[in-house]
Length: 331
Length: 293
Image (cartoon, rainbow over all chains, first blue to last red; front, side, top):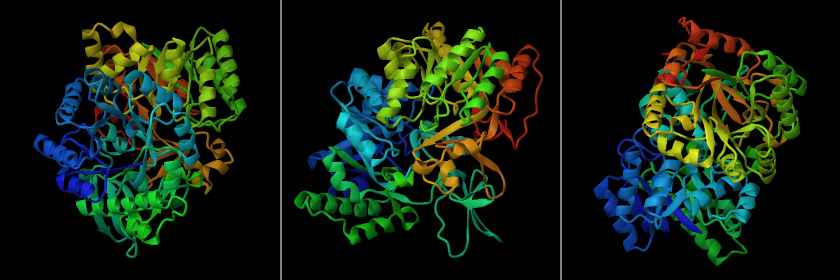
């Protein structure tokens, strides 16, 4: 099972490879990918360097072109595909049907992976992508339980990749307009959720307040840790009850599922976090490498070490982790 | 322009659903969509009940009836029901997931690409046409300008007559889908033990900011807009750019009145001031969806 790590810049990419990633995924420096943040991602020069670094070490490079092409601007997305192929990417991660069609027609020999943003959650949808674009991998959204992933893995004509660790999208990816409803910008259109330019922090008599485009997302008392106001992780009111109505600040962590994921034939585990620092990428990659190697060595008495869990919890939102939708009770 | 009554996204008791569609028969809608699009655990009406309801409406009226299908499908059992609905042999089907597109293509039957099919550009639209799409409802987060570009490109490409264009024009917007049931969570229950709690909230549960702003509506695994989307002032613009159908979303408040109001607006446009704390039209104007332009 491949360990696929995120990189938002060259230092993070090198760190991921040096610490045991089998493959890294990156995005271009524009709105063609779902982590379109200031100061992040790769221009043409950096792209070539990234490819060289990865390929010299016999690892794989995946390039995410996974937002939806804007009306009349398909050229920009197609050009991104051209650039990625030109520097020798090993795989293209795509969500838009038009862009997939372009890539499959023009570059039939370059692997196409169905992005998580394409919301592929069942066998018929997988068949759709297989039949039409001959894709070689589908990245599953974080909405399926372990049982559902197992069922799909059994019947899927295409190998499957799952999310293993990182920030937890609780909505079916590619099908969430909460961010554009509040700010006008969404992952699908601009490649960002709850964009930083709409965030405001303010100390008030009632506590420290975080707002997104003016809407109060959360209010913290002195003893509480304040987190980034991702809009689905704030505290809201439902009939006088104030709570995390959608989700708490928490990160996904599936270390404990490693044996099951391997047994069911999942081909790749993906670490979320192209927006994270090289130091973060280092710690997460190292921990996951250790865990995967341990399983290879001792498949019958694999146990998750407390130290691994602590390391990962410390890197997590709200310093806590969850199995998310993999665990039915979470749902 | 025609007017459609979109599928009800809420969970209502069977007799209320039946009553609702009795009213719908007498309404001014030209097209009626019906079917469960949100949660497969909602079984007040099963596939066969939806289909017989569709038959009844079609028999008693000259309206076009379309069977709407689920958005987030995760299990073989859900796919089985989807296939049954797709292969109904009589009614046009609204696909809300690519699984339905796949099935309709195999059946060689036309389909409507519903709001949860991510068609953001002409290349995708052309691809869906090849699959058998006969009507397209653009993703609700897109703007009038965005639509205008695609429709003009379709004219330029000589394919505009190959599909009808429908726009979600009134009602609570479907914004997101999750594995988690937020209505169950609001009652401190897990989805597997939800006790069908959605049925207690015929218009969903309001989720407000701590300052009382109606941010979202919780509707099971679906999150909807807190405000009702209202494009009544944009009707002449929709008409002008060649939109074929305006969709009024089914709800238990004023959907039938809105159908009449929207039709009247087309004949005699009168600017309506929107209520900024209950209505919105931001998406159409390419600003925050919850705002009013």
